[in-house]
Length: 280
Image 1 (cartoon, rainbow, N blue to C red):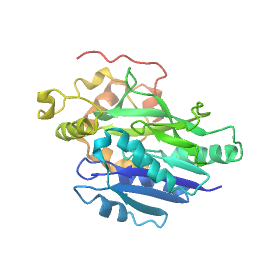
Image 2 (image 1 turned 90 degrees about the vertical axis):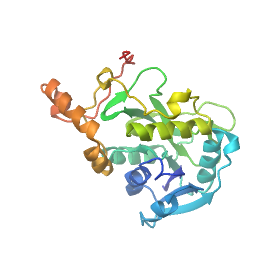
Image 3 (image 1 turned 60 degrees about the horizontal axis):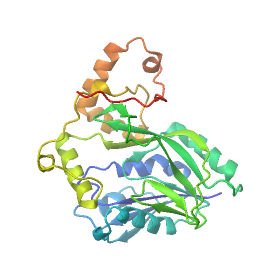
Image 4 (image 1 turned 180 degrees about the vertical axis):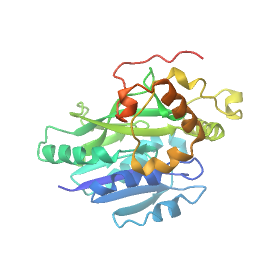
């Protein structure tokens, strides 16, 4: 069995994507990692090269922004086409996998490698928001999706590249792994969040009001979101450590939930209930 990792990235430094951490998080279990580097306004290409791992294979493409958000699935499929493994493990540039989940994922892939009835493997999502110790599970934030797909040419990235589909239109057959994708796209300084949202609007993800393009983004009262007491992937240790809002938030959570077994044992857990965020 051979496993390919793959991703796309553009302007990683400009928009503070943790793409190096993302790639490194699954390098131990892949045989190769294909990185599709788009034309950037910063030194993204040099950043990827600096990882210095022989498993990494870089391809370069110019993104046609006139395609709107479909440019992401198009570029993702170009990277997928370069993969040589039996399985292709896709991570977006702000998604990271915990090292404790790697042995489980490798076992899942070995288990189903020759079982053609399985198309993909499904993950749970932890969408961290404002703090590395708060996450979103309310309406509008998808909670499960496929990230490992069978590399047989029959499965492609679709839409804005958050999902995959079969070319023949049949639903993907995807057993749940019970493993997490750690999504860090919403844990940034408020001015960086504004820049990222303006970029998202340019691609076609959202529509902003005038003041939203210039004012610093507001996360509001973080206490209205569920708390996360578990560990983060080891590759994210420094980013978590230097994020002041997260450290303050964790201290407040430590005082409030001093009694919680989830906190005491650092259990990696998220609530199974849809939690409606209170209006602050």
